[in-house]
Length: 212
Image (cartoon, rainbow, N blue to C red; front, side, top):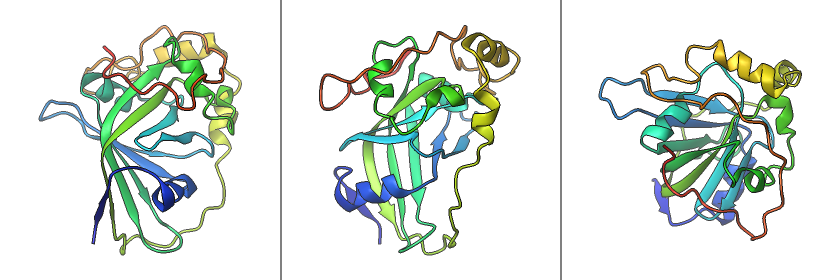
C-alpha cells in the first residue's frame, strides 16, 4: 500500500538518489492545453538540496514545455521507478521554479552539481522543486531493466556550442521561447553562463515562488 512522507530523508532519499532515470510531469492551466511528460537522466544532474527541496539541471533541447508550464503555474510532479531490486515508485508533487542563468541564485545552485560538467550540455536553467506531497506505491508491474550507462550523444552534440551559437540554435526552434500552447518559455537572448560559487549557507536559497 502507498505511504506518505513528511520529508525526503533516510531510505527514501537514498532510493531517489540511486535512480539513473526519473520523469517530470507538468501542464498548463488551460483545459485543452498540452500535458508534458519528460524523462530525465545524465549522472550528476539531479540533487536533493534539503528534506523538502530538489533540483535538476535543465539542458539544451528542442522544446521548453516544463519551463513554460512552471512559469505559468508552478505545478510539477517528479517520479522515480525501481527497475532493479525491490519494487517501488516514488512521486513528489510540488511547486517548481526555473532559475535562469541571470538569476543571482544560479551560481550557488550550480555548485550543488559538482559531478557533471554542465558546460558540455548547454545548460539553460536549474529547476528547483519544493515538495508539497511525497508518496510511494508498490510498483509491482514495473519491469526489471538494467542500467548500462549514460548515452554520450547529448554531450557530444552540445559541448561544441558557445553561448552565442546556443542562443542562435534556440532561436531556430519553434517551441523554446514559446511553448506548444503559446506560453512564454525560455527567455531569450540567452545570458552567459555564470561560474558556480560555493554557497555560504549549508543549504541553498529555496525557490521563492513563480518567476514572471
